[in-house]
Each structure stands twice: as structure tokens, then as C-alpha cells.
Length: 362
Ligand SMILES: *Cc1c(COP(=O)(O)O)cnc(C)c1O
Image (cartoon, rainbow, N blue to C red; front, top):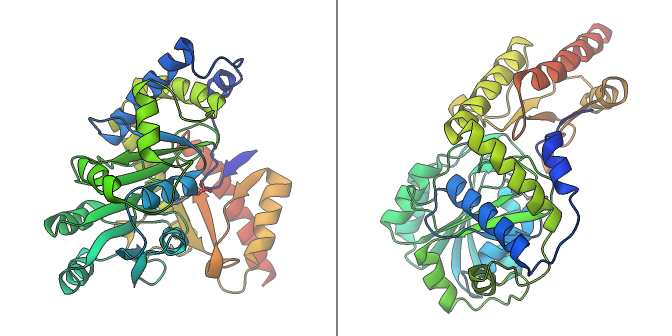
């Protein structure tokens, strides 16, 4: 099976094998060592000099943790959404009683830092900005460093969904002045689903001391205090930690620059192949096209869902579909984590062949 959805992503055999290890005492010295090594690995990838927290949950749980640990009901928040995951981040804030102001682009477009700057200038009561680094539903990467610069200059908090970017494309949290940054294990980390990672800046911790949104399982302060004893407050997804411990060995051997360069090269290859087939990318401006997932319009008059089904059933190639209003209109190729050009080449060979057959029939 060639699993080409943007998460969960395929994992190296040795990582899966590491995850199959026998259970141990999750409050014992052996697991403490694993938690220390894994947290060091997270700090390395995030570019953080303080410990990144990990929660047993999926990426969405990490987004919920980001919200409830820094905000209070009634806090004014600017939601920057460029697709379905941006909308999800906003929905979580609303569910917990934030007073949400929206900046939404057309899907396929990136957010404009100047618009965010203007909205913050116009409304000094906005306390925090929610933004997606890499919008997995449209294959668009926001200019996060420039956005963060505007938010920082106006002294607001910036909460970032980096679920499908962190570990695959650069996102140095301290260098860019980000406040809360979330990622998820099943995306670029080469491990199964089960863990979300949450970085919090000093400013975020100061906000945490005042934050009144209800929280229990996702309490960051509890999690930080347990981590100081090299434990989790609750029973963690231990197998995913075992796997991640091994994945960090592979990542350190390749180096962060090597990982970023590989993702960039595979993404460039994917975009060039797709364009050479005469297909159109969903990102309107290719400068913002994602290096972890490529979203492509099915051509007019072609039954994309039927092609996806044949790709899976006859060739073992699993493509991502469109979400929300893009359902049936686009396909997505995930190229993050443990991915090489040959994986994408095989998938696109199949798409090319099935498309040619479909077009011949039209
Ligand atoms: C995958 C993803 C999430 C979280 O999804 P889960 O299914 O909860 O892990 C959030 N944001 C983005 C950008 C994602 O790609």
C-alpha cells in the first residue's frame, strides 16, 4: 500500500518495531529516560530552550490544549483561517466562549500579514491570534514568520497550528517569537497517531496563570509539573513514545536541514509532475504551496472520486480527498515524514495513467 494521505503517514519498519516493545511502569525510571530523550528531541525540532509538552491525544486535542491553557471566556481572539483546519481552530475557541473575530481568505490563498496587522491596529482588545502554519486541506503554507512579526510588534499572543508542518518544514518557535505551537505525531514525525506536542513561550505561561477556560485532562501546568518529575499526569500512549524515541534517532542522523531539504525536493518534484500533466494546483500563488502536501484540482468533467477509488483498489495507491467544500473537486498527495521521491512518483504514475483513460473516454 502506498499511503499518500497527509497523515497518518507511513512509518519506517524499525520505528514500528520499536513501538511493539513490552509495557513498563509509566512512572518508573526506565520510562523517565525515554520521556527525557523524547522531550529533548521535541525541543530540538521546535527550536525551544524550554521543555515542549506532550499530551496523549490527536492534533485536535493539542489545539484544544492551546486554547484552554491561555485564554478566558470572553477574551477577544482573531481567527486567521485559510481552510478547514483554520476553521476547526476557530470552532474550538468559540466552543470555550472566546469572542472570535474572523479573517478568512478564499481557500487556496495564504493569509496576508498586512491585513492581520491592520485588524490588530483597529482592535486593541484582541488578545490572541489563531493561525494555521500549514493548511493541510488546501496545501497552502502561511508566511508565518512575517505574520508573527506583526503580532509580536503589537504585543498580542500568537497561537499556531503547526500540526502538519513542524518537523518537515522550518518553524523555529523561539526565533520567530511564537507563543503556543501545536503538532501531532502522525504527520511529519514518522510515528503513529496518539501524541500531540505543545510548546508554550514565557508569555504563554504568563497568560496561563490568568486563563480561566475550563480544563482538566489538558491542563498544561499539571503536565509541566509532572514533566519536571519525568512523568505524565495520566497514563500516556507509551508505545508512541517508544516509536518516537527511535524516530528521533533517524531524524538526528539525517539532521534538520537534511529533512527540510528532502521535503522541499519531493514537494518540488510533486508540483512539477502535476503541472506537467496539465493539472492546476489549489494554491493560487505557488510561493505559498506547501512542502508537506500538494492539493490539485481534478480537471473539469472528470470523476475524481472514481479515479481515487481505482487508484486504491487496482494499484494500492491511497490519495487524500478534498475536505468540506472541496470534496470530490480536488485530490491531495501527502509528502511528509518518511517520504522519498519514488513514493510520490509511483502515486503520480498511477494518477497519470487513470486520468489519461478517463480523458480518452470524455
Ligand atoms: C491533521 C491536522 C490537525 C489535527 O488533526 P487530528 O486528526 O486531530 O490529529 C490539525 N491541523 C492540521 C493543519 C492538520 O493537518
